[in-house]
Image (cartoon, rainbow, N blue to C red; front, side, top):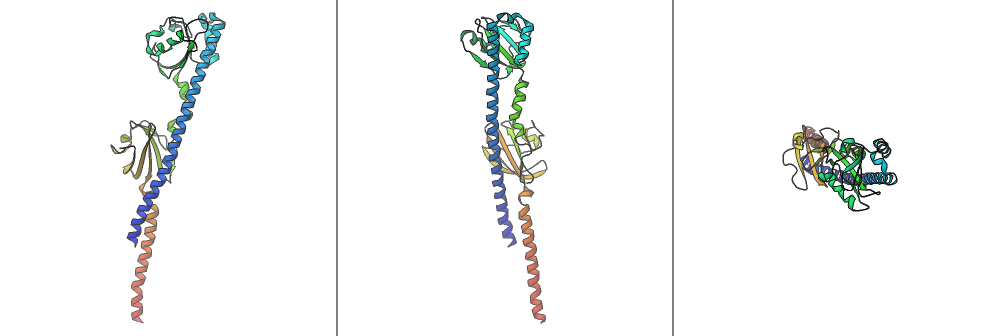
Length: 290
């Protein structure tokens, strides 16, 4: 009876653990999708604000074109708009006004990054907010937004350091998803990218480390989803994984926790069985002696 009960409870405990893990993975998946939506919303709003600032500068230039050659006034406007750089080009895409003096004379057609804004010379109502990328002039990472000039053909740009956008996006940082996420008493969630680089963990440690360096077996994550048992970080656990969007979600529960209730029940049943056997062995002797 104890053996049969042990086998039945083993299967039941394992299925219960898998169900709990699946439910948690669904919650993680929903959280990741919410983060993705939040990131897109933040990017769209950030881009819209950058374009609005470029339009504001174009409007100022339209009213007072002389500010293009006034470095002091351009710097004041830069601070007022809360951006890192201002640039204004002529009808040939040559920068003629800038908050960075060394940029004056730069040809916007000389690099693919800056050349994208040349359409502003030919199309009214042009506006573009680029993703952060290396500058054409010195290859440092930057983000620009640009519109057409109102006073004459040309380009008006505002520029931001990527750190600005990064600070804004921290509110939707994927590394926060698995932070302090428990499954049961000691189960954990981990998130990695397609290259196996860890992006989010329970304690915020090991970020950037590869899954194999962390201790997972090689080729453990085959297929769109799956499960396996392995000893990782010194503890044998049940692992389940699933690819969600561009992320790999890994959830685990230690094997000791999975079978704790089974072990307890089996121990009680075994003890009761042994007592029952002992009592049954004593009773016949008592009957013979009477």
